[in-house]
Amino acid sequence: MIIDLTAVLFLVSGLINVVLVWYIVQLLKRFLNFQAQLDGFMDKIQEYAEHVDVVYNMENFMGDPTLANLLQHSKGIAEECDGFKTFYLTETDEVQEEYAEAEDEVTYGE
Image 1 (cartoon, rainbow, N blue to C red):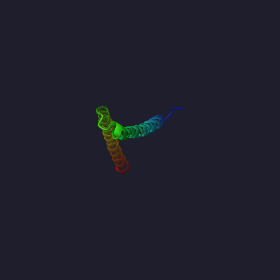
Image 2 (image 1 turned 180 degrees about the vertical axis):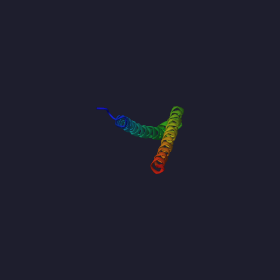
Image 3 (image 1 turned 90 degrees about the horizontal axis):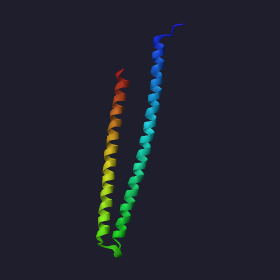
Image 4 (image 1 turned 90 degrees about the vertical axis):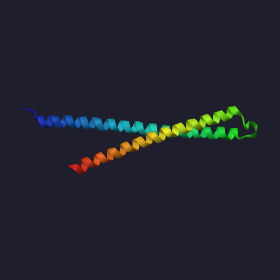
C-alpha cells in the first residue's frame, strides 16, 4: 500500500498550521497580559505622583526642595512610562492594521 504524497504533505501542512495557530494564541495571551500589567503600573505611578503632589502642597512641606525634586522625578517617570505606552500601543496598532490589510489581500486576491 503506497501512501499518496499529496496526502502526507497535506497532513504535515495541517499539523504545522495547528502548531502555528496555537503559538499565535499563546503570544496574544502574553501580549494582553503585558498590556494589562502596563496599564496597572501606569495607574500606580500616576497615583504616586498625585500623592506626592498632595504632600508637597501641605502647609508643613510647602517649598521643601526634597519633595519638589521627588515630585519632579515622579512626574518625569510617569511621562516616560506614558511615552513608552503610547509608542508601544501605536506600534501594535500599526502592526494590527498591516495584518488586517494583508488578510484582506489574501482573502480578496484569490
